[in-house]
Image 1 (cartoon, helix red, strand yellow):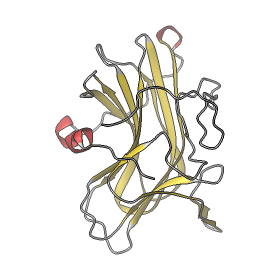
Image 2 (image 1 turned 60 degrees about the vertical axis):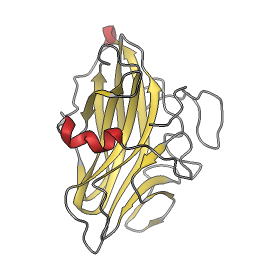
Image 3 (image 1 turned 135 degrees about the vertical axis):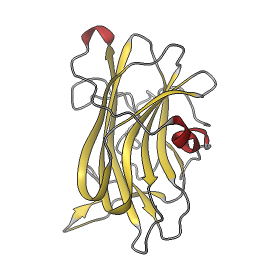
Image 4 (image 1 turned 90 degrees about the vertical axis):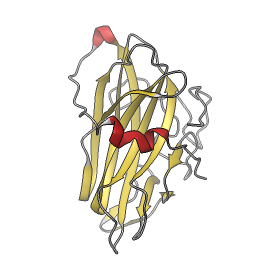
Length: 219
């Protein structure tokens, strides 16, 4: 994965590169969590079809809040089983990490979308990962979460990822998965407040493809 490791803390209203507060009142660790510049600054992607969108009509909006959301278009004939958007940050031991994202599925009958944490060692090898519940079919924006994830010993990095998993060959109508309003925060292990509601992910063998596929920045 080719990505900067520093948490961006400079004030930059255009791409939301600030340490702001999450909905729970904790410090937001992510930059550009809502894509409000209409670009992927601070994020990297793998797999085709990623774009930001401000489209809306009477049936819904591509943004959960604000103007823009991130969209992955899956077209008939696409061969990529795994696609994703990712931001990587250093971890502190003794902290518990919680994250969330709002996901919408439109004609998502051939796949599913979820939130994923990957804890990485200094060489960016995956040591442990956890996933949220999945969103699929035709589903309005729904918040999914991973709570109180503790970095394993020797982990140095955390990748928070929006994942699209195509469970079968896309049909003619295509599939559309939308992400907005990511959150990531950390609290001291001694003040854990909620139970962990993440689900165990697919087996490491199943997940090897996105784990090791290089990330590329999407304009």
